[in-house]
Image (spheres, rainbow, N blue to C red):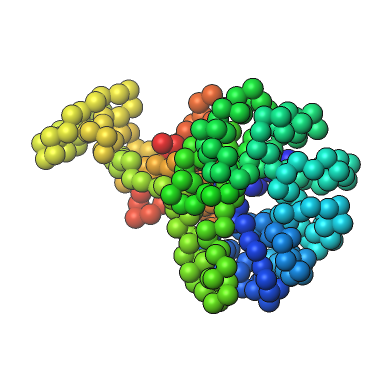
Length: 319
């Protein structure tokens, strides 16, 4: 059960989908996968939901697939039989929660109040859906009611799009965000799968928010590092900061006092979420060098990727 929620947290965004036609299932899943989002919550609001889940599960077994708007135990059974890996309910329905826990089925019930959250904790749940998020006061309200419940993480859904996505994801208690803005009904109706892919890619880029932090330059020793840093200073005039292992010229250049990773040096890329960035890049076949991990208070701060580009090593940095 924990593995499912770990994967949801690594992906960070859970597309919420209403499928009126089962024939849309495979091309939609393909569009999301191409956009970097191997996850979907298919809602049980239509008669096509069960077949759609079944088709996606069969054609894209690597996709993290859930069933949403589940209202009955019969729907739970139908969703699981079709291949859904987790269940999402709009509210905290005791009958469904108890059944899923008994059957060891991952479930995220919807909550909107501290009383509902208390009930979820009584059931031993550590992940719940905050729904409808924006209509219930948004991120500030979520922070307020979550304070006493330190063991619980949230998947806010409802009214979330790329304009407020990072407001939620920046809160450490938010596991991921659910949203339908990438898969609007009109896009499906008009078979605009390229647009769905574009929106999925845009959502990932918004979430990760990659940025250039600095360029690192390898040198043979401290003397050469001083010379290189001095030349950069002469050009740009940025203030120099001498540390034990390197000399920074502004925040943009790091001149190392030794030869390190990369034939010439390294490029540091910042991101809002280094853990999600690592997971995203791994899905693209780009791994990390585990021995380069730098953590603080148990959280990853920097790590080098297992590639070089143009003679430069690449490392990610938590911003």
